[in-house]
Length: 125
Image (cartoon, rainbow, N blue to C red; front, top):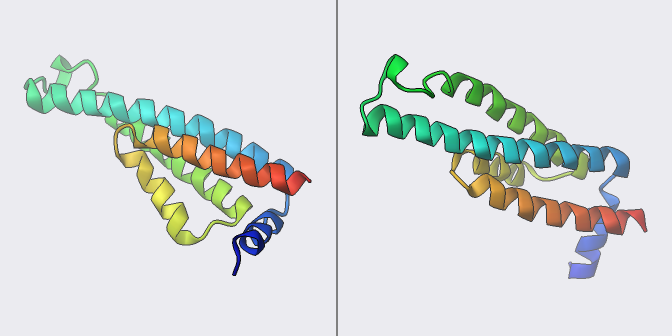
């Protein structure tokens, strides 16, 4: 299949452009929030295990549980976007896993946003 035919198939697979745009906005916010949250989690782990600041001595000891809920929101936002623009399961899982590596969610957000915005622009034509 040629690149042009492949791109045409991708563009036609976006059924609702407005819903995909909204899903992309939510994804971008959640990717940023989960990236910041993951950096806070890393700081909490470093303080807890690296500096032996366990329990109340660690100012971020409350953070792991909220971070888990935020990550679940990121998973939902990624799945929502993936279904709207018809990603395959493998791609969806890879983008979801980007939220567990420090700084990777920021890179994935930029890469995904560029790809999806390009596909949305082509779908609007």
